Amino acid sequence: MNEKELSAEVMQDMDNVIRYIEANLNKFRRIVLKSTRFPVYSYHTYTSPRKNKWIIILEARNKKEFGKMCGVTYVVTYDTPHGIYAILYSILNGNPILFFYPPHFFKRFRERTGQDKSGMDLIKEFFKINVGVVNKIINKMIDDNTCMYEVIGTTDSGVCLGLITSERNVHFKTFITKEMLKGEQIDTFIMTDAIRQEVYG
Image (tube, rainbow, N blue to C red; front, side, top):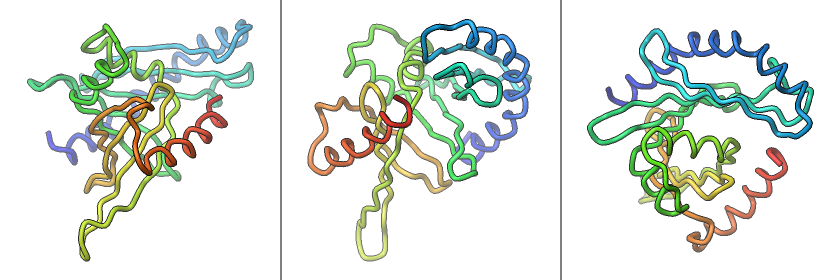
């Protein structure tokens, strides 16, 4: 499937995913209310009726964040001859947006953070330790008639680098550590990381 077809498939499956999560919210509520340390996470793997494989993470940063108030991370994965692709579903300014992560991205994440996991375990680990991401879009003029929109995503363990696609999604191409930043990337990281720390703590 191309990006447009994948996007449509993810959007069509969201009703199934939301129903699954709503059926599990009471269990998470009990975990949150009993917890004495925060944030609290609950991790789920779910195969939808459309045969899509999802990783879903529930997050509560205090005792009030349960039910509709908890944070939810939705990631669907696709196994291909080139490796496993992951697509994160999110909402930006009230509109759905997808973040695409190719196998090369996770390969670089593994190499540059010293992870010893691979495959689905590596992908789960990435989203487990990088629940909160703050993105900065940079407009780059290629010539007088063409511009490109770069995206720098600041996470807890490093930086995701990518582009806005023609379908208005984000394609993260690679992962670098904070130490690998250079030039204006450093100033962008400092700004977005400050926002991330304020929002996600």
